[in-house]
Picture 1 (cartoon, rainbow, N blue to C red):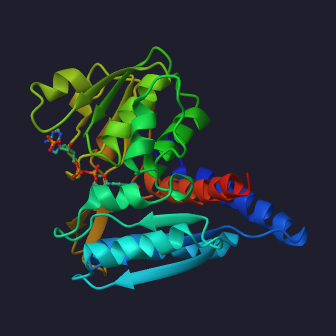
Picture 2 (cartoon, protein in one colour):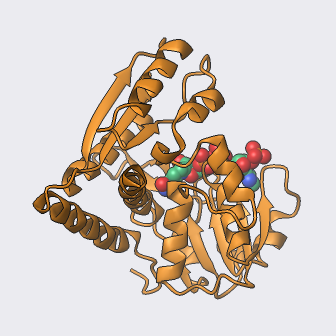
Length: 292
Ligand code: NDP
């Protein structure tokens, strides 16, 4: 194992322990616990696994949770009504609508229906707009970008003035992260599938963040020596040596990039656990907002 690992598992555990203590203290004081409602529509196996992991993490720290598992053919009206009902339920302090939704549903309007102070994923378009605006803070920082920023801070990566390259421009990772890094005074380049001469651009990065969903796509020759490398990708590849028949790899060729990077996140054990820790943190924040 290389020594320059950015250990998301370790940092996430200490955040989770801290939240657990906060909730125990609240219970001892007779105060209410936070409550998270998750909504899963359809039976995408990856989404099901993600929701299960989030609910387990809630259980472990004392966040009450209620899970809605709805059929694939759930209508827009039914989902809208459920969100409104949860918005009005004082025991539900946070609402998480697991994405992606089945194609027939209008994702944007459903995300917009989630009350801003319960939008623990930070995907309500108004919250996203606040991320983009200078001098205005979002109500919630979306979980994966928030986790990445915590990792960079914990490992003392200089962000202000750094050249940060974000590969991937999704609504949930790449784009909000690029905006947040800009707010932190990095000089940010966003790359995507139409970017020309990608290796030339990634080689300029002091901080390189990759969220594209392509196994081991970023190789050592694409990385500046001494860069901080954050690998968001989670890809399952065949591996006959494993009992399961597969293993998880990131978007970065870990072994070779670890040789040139100042520090690098592994997959698994890097960004993934931080995403869940940030969901728990956002759910605590939602409780504070509900009490204001
Ligand atoms: P999306 O599939 O929504 O977006 C992928 C992005 O990568 C797009 O912007 C796309 O460009 C870009 N892209 C695709 N191919 C290339 C390429 N060859 N060169 C440059 N850019 C490319 O991805 P997500 O952000 O949802 O997820 C990305 C990865 O991160 C996935 O593996 C996912 O599983 C993982 N993930 C991990 C999380 C965690 O907690 N660790 C949380 C969320 C996601 P274009 O816009 O032009 O199509």
